[in-house]
Every structure is written in C-alpha cells, then in structure tokens.
Length: 500
Image: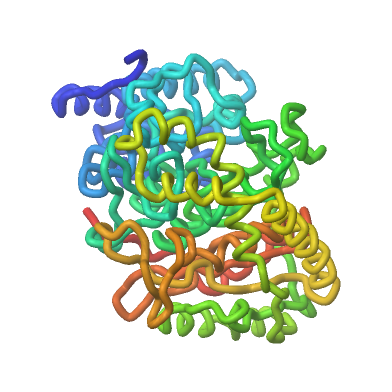
C-alpha cells in the first residue's frame, strides 16, 4: 500500500536511529534524553523546535521509539508510516534552517483517527468493507493539520464506522485502556486518547457525535474538546449539528494550540462559522471571580455509578475556590433521549443500510440494530425529534442567560471490561441500546454547545474520571479558559499511566 510501512523491528530501529543526529545517540540538542521528549507538551515541543534546541527528526524519532515500545500492548496506532514521518521531519528541519516560515504545529507528530481520509495511507473506518482502502486525497482537516506543520505518523483505532463508545473492530481488534489493560479506553476516538496518554503522539484529531471526543478522553485522563458545530471542518455537507471534528491532547493549552490550526470557515459546510482559528493560540489566563456555574443534579434521573459521582462532586469546591458562584441547576432533558436517538438512526440509515443488505456478516450487530430502528421510524417521529432539538436549543439559550457554565460528569460509568461491547446496565437500571449509557454526553450534543472533557480524578480502583464543562452557544474560548483554570488548580492530568 502506498506510503504505508510495516517494517521489521531491525529496520524500525534504523529509522529511529537516523533521527538522533544531534549530540550523543538518544540525547536531544537541548540536553533532554530522547524519551523525555515524549512527555513534553505540544506547546513546549514547538518552542524547542522553532528555536532550534531540538530538531523535528529528534522529536519524531523519540515518538516512534515510544510507539515501538508500548503500542503493541494497547493497539492504539493501527497503521504506522514511520519512514514517511522521518522524511517529513527532515524536510521540516530543512525548512526551519532555511529561514522559511513555520506553522503553529511545526514538527509535531500527529496521528489521525481511522475515519478521516489520508492520501496514500490506509483508511479503513474500522470496517472489513474498507480494510484495504487507500484514499487519494487528504480530508480538509488533515490538510489543515499538515499545512500548520504537523507530521503524520499514522492512524488511530476506532470502532466500526465510529459507531459506539467502545473501540474495537474486525479489522484491528480492541484498543486497551493504558491505566488497566483489561478495561476499555472508550470511543470512538479511543486509539487517539490512548496514544496521547502513553506519549505516542502529543496531539491527535478525533470526532464526536454522542461523546466520541469526550468519552475516551475521560477514560484515558487526557483532554478532548467538542467544539461548536461548524468551528472545525467536516467532510459531509450536512445541516445537522450532531457530528463535529475536534482536537485531543494531554492539556487544555495543547488542545487550544491544535484548535488554532484546524478551526476556521469552510465553504463546503453549511454550518461553517466565519471566524479564523488564530485566536485560540493566545494565552488562556482569566480570572473567574463571580462566574456563574450550574452544577448538575441528576440529568433528569440518569443512573450514574457511585464512584463517578463521588469523584465529580469532590471537585465542586475547586470552582468555588476560583471565585465562581456555584448552584445546582440543569436544563430540562425530558424527551432528549428519544430525540437524539431518532435523529441518529435517521442520519445513519443511508450510510449503513446498503452495507447491511450487501454483507450483513460484515456489519456489527449494533449498526444493524440502528438500521432496523431507522426503518421503524415515521415522518412524524422524525418531526417530533427535530422539534425537541429546536426546543432544547431555546431552553439552553435561556439557561445560559442565568449561567456562564454547566458542569457535569462526562460518563455515567468508569472504564468497563474491554471484552464487553457496551454496558447493559448501570446498577439496577437496564440500558435500552448500545448508546444509552452515554446520555450524559449526547444530551449535551443535542444542545449544540461547546463542551470539554478534562481530567478530574480517579476511582478507588485507579481508573480516570472526566469532568465535562459546557459553555454558551459558540463561546468555545470561554470553555477552554475555564478548563485551563480547573486544570491548573487540580493537576489531575499530570498523572500518567504506569505502562512501560
């Protein structure tokens, strides 16, 4: 397959060694051991490379060595292009040495979700239908990332067609949680979250319909940002605000830097926001004295595991210490479950129904379930769902006239067994579908407001828990600022997996 490398361990070592050209082998020009380069923030790596203290080849070699060291244990990066990445890193060094302009993501290794097209690099969508698919052009998102100077190392694992919040498929198998290899990493941007947590890459792109940027970030103790619909380009020319693309990283600052490169108007998207992304590269510092925070109650009676409740509610005082006025309040979510699932099924039917008819044995049961549910819908069902979506938007607007932020759990459960496709119950409450356990995320999706998942602590068993911060309509900047303030105050995101 063009540009795709599956090189031997010996050749891999040669490829990595070729990047360690400054100083002693394994030591960067600024004196950092090459392994430590994989622990630095994206912001710091860009600074070091732009000032010439470390080369892009050294940074790439360090990350490729880390991939070689641990990726087989978790299955996060499923397609690797090591030789191409080293060649691109050499070109990035030449560009800087020649005094040519460099982008905001100069030299950063990046892995792309295996749902987004990459020219010359296999893109399977986690489906047997596309296991040998090699696109001829990059998606707009990938083009923007590359134009900003980042360097592709490969593709991250995803559920089949990105459906569901548990990362496994028949092409590559499951991706495992780096904090406990017996647990799931979440999804659908699961491979991306694991790659970040383990230092395989400093930034990774993802996408989100029902929580696919937020859920795996919460399960892996990294940051996932669902931007406002239209903030970041998606390939489909859809009027629906449900699905978005967005950034993931290990810190809020790195997410903001990444967003500055990928945000911006795109004429092919009817919901595109006419605002450049450059503002997101600014400092995130802000005082929050007097900011009004609405603290979740029970999300309309949703079941949430006791461990998750305990961890999330334990950080309420952090917002109070920041000077925020915190009170219990939440939007009215009655009928939102039915509205979201109806709109989801209706949107997915044209994507999957022909495949189900063609080779049903190649399609996982949960996708076949969605197709079957869509075929039961009436026009009246879809109309009621659209009306509830519109009403929730109005209710959310009124809600955010009283509050600046809404804070709630990202997920209703902690990471569960990797062999289970999805939780069938939470406590005594049975789940009615494979996405039912993710309502804490997809309720927010239907609001169409920006939302971020930021680390907020660990269960008694040592598994990560994420906090979800939701902001006003299209006020992505304030969400990032609040998340950065919370991150600085707590430092939960600094706890990395013990996997070596």
